[in-house]
Picture 1 (cartoon, rainbow, N blue to C red):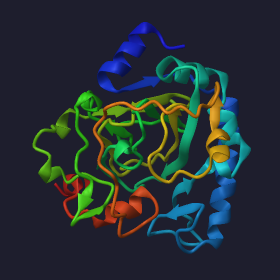
Picture 2 (spheres, rainbow, N blue to C red):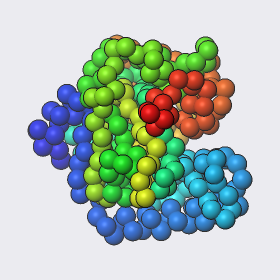
Picture 3 (tube, helix red, strand yellow):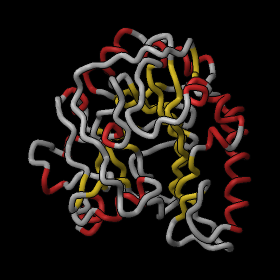
Length: 292
């Protein structure tokens, strides 16, 4: 369970880091599974349902930037999502009934690892309420120079969804030149030792820079929602929805709250992962920063 201070910090800032959520043994197992996926990626030449690849990817030098929906690909990811320590934290924040919305494994190799431009997760998947967060399981030590998640504390409490469109189509990113109400210099880096976890609110403004170090950064992201937060888009079946319960009981009574919304429609020109969506963004914060 979170302490009162940790919970108050999450409510105020929209983000916290909790240390020692996972022990070295399960992290070692997880690294072995990831290595197997990377080995299989040598036979892949373009993005598919499993892999999102860096432009530098080759069979000789596999550069995977994301494994998509890993909870569908190997049981260890469900083991992590349902672990006792993690579920106790999720219950503290979201209540007793929690469902997995989605998952992804973002991988930043040394002096590689693409940046992710500023965005709100809420812009991608609006629900009937915003009791939703993303857990960032740190598989490696996350430090200031290897591309940590950067968050703007308190932005989840602003009654606003910033524009994530370019030329009338969703692009999964915010134009930094069109956000005078945000001070990106106040971003906080979510750093920690392997086994730590970050927790950030679905409406929090966040992003991450390229990995500038000689150390890799692998981060498993688990998107978790209160069971009574129902998705407004891409709904499949009740059976599939209920199959993603992490803890507690499902419900067929969505809780609707007055929260700001902006639909991610029309869809992105480059469908796929956030990396592909964001290729349409002309004014890029992290590329411009790297050039100065």
